[in-house]
Length: 131
Image (tube, rainbow, N blue to C red; front, side, top):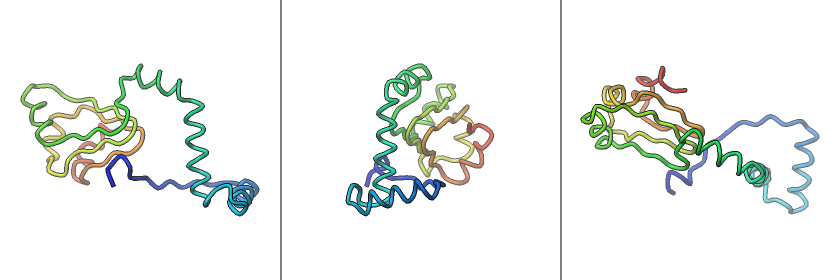
């Protein structure tokens, strides 16, 4: 399974009546299970707001989807004297061989709407730069 296909677990508190209605729809065969219902509901809401999401992504210059930062890419950024402002809607990953020192030298800020994956050491080093 590719990184983009992986899922994140979330916790959702629902009222008992809402949960009962979902269970009834599952029982009647409209959905395979509660998770199927919730994924379908989330996708429907994202479709309703697709234009607003698209405009926001363009306005904020956010990378949409999967963005992976390798050690080689960050070494090139350091050599050029630049610093990155990582802004991703989806999944941002920093390769396991990136050291905390390299991350600090090359990453100015991290804003991820979705999931951010990096080694615990890199996350700890960047903790004040993660929004």
